[in-house]
Amino acid sequence: MLQIEGWKRVLITLVCLAGILLAVPNLFYDRVERFNDAEAAIEAGVTTPEDAADAGLWPGFLPSGLVNLGLDLRGGAHLLAEVNLADVYAARVDAYWPEVRDALRGVRAEAGTIRRQESAGDALVVRISQPEGMAAAVEAVRGLAQPIQTLSGVGSTDIEVSGAGDLLTLTLSDAERARVDEQTMQQSLEVIRRRVDEAGTREPTIQRQGADRILVQVPGIGSAQELKDLIGSTARLTFHEVIGSTGDPEARVSADQLLVPVADPSRQGELRILERTPVVTGDDLTDAQSAFDQNGRPAVTFRFNPAGARLFGAFTSANVGQPFAVVLDGEVVTDPVINEPITGGSGQITGNFTVEEANVLGITLRAGALPAELTFLEERTIGPELGQDSIDAGQVAALVAMGAVVVFMVLSYGLFGAFATVALGLNVALIFGLLSLIGGTLTLPGIAGIVLTIGMAVDANVLVFERIREELRTAKGPARAIELGYEKALSAIVDANVTTFIIAVILFALGSGPVRGFAITLGVGILTSAFTAIFVTRLLVVMWFERRRPKTIEV
Image 1 (spheres, rainbow, N blue to C red):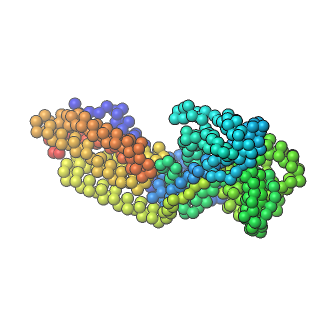
Image 2 (cartoon, helix red, strand yellow):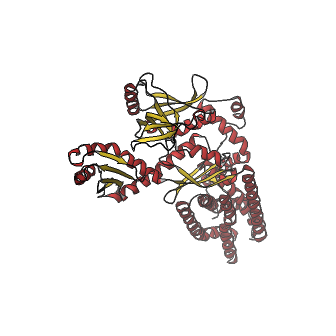
């Protein structure tokens, strides 16, 4: 008997209504977006008169979820950056110097005096005065090696030590380099993600590409340069003991010292001679905020964690009356004199900042320092106008596709084709409703996925209608023909949709960027198409049949 239980009818109707309700906010995109921004500001406790006005743009009892627009639809910035891993090797090797120095002092009787030599960044070279004691020196430094705690590095240590003549050389092992590479890329991804999130942007794409590259796409940001300013600086903050000052960029300093330029334009050409090993680094920061100093100039306040506060307090207590340098990304931003011990664990960075620069610096310090400098290999800015053009083109394509499908279905199947077109409209609404619910991002390839789904959505109906035609030829009556048509076409519908859905899952798992956008809309479209074909169209046909009770039907 051709019938659908009452609870199933209610459930199908509720699903369709819920999908329409979730999709409706996308018809008023700008208004709902401003409403959502105002609600977020009110929850954060930072409101303006504009926020109060925008909070009334949309009824609070209605859903306000939106389909996020990707870079190619909203406009924004695209960057491809390369992480300079060699910088990390140099920093890791340099960090071994205090331990190496102490270890060699323990074998001074055999090795004699030691002096660090200038060398390539990924090697630490030490000259000993008694070459005959090289074996003892190498053995002492090898005692600093630690086993690699990764599956790929089992049985390896983190450093390799060798000696030739009077020169001892320490380098990172291959296993340690591999571990550092992976750790550096993961840390870089996380730091960039935190910086972008701090800036309040929507749905950024931040992902690793290859061994040492990172792709960053941020919709809604003004330009690629603005994005570079936000994520490009390493924000490597260190505090150093000041040895002296010079104006000669060719001045020779020992391997234990650094020659660092002063950032202040009024002191152009001045260089500070600093102790190479920092007293404390930005890794010990727990917070950083833009503020104003006692003279009303933009500044950045910071606070250390307990370990950093202890080190900083001990240093300032032992060096009252001496200057210390705050170095940010290779420049001395300030070098105040220590007037009294700073034991509270907080301080202030002053310099020739603008308000915007102080705000960006606060964001970058809060997010943490990039472990290595980024080299930008590709940058692209997509304007909002181009994004709107893409949306308009996608809308035209979708309407043309839908119109062609409607004409074909009505001409081919008559009234049953009209039922299929109603289900098609509901299918599109369900796609946008589901994307809004899960917070999916719509890209130009995603629109292509929706257009493809519109074409594929009627496939199931075609299978059913053709099957009903075959059953009508056996003269079993219209009710039985419709029932058998849906029953016998079900397996083919499920098989076709399951195989296509598997492909969508594979594209999402292995693809990136635009490919994932296409996979998401294709997968969601397959789910909604199967639902509308199997349930919605059948419900429409059954309701029509119950109302008209035709003796014969024509498909």
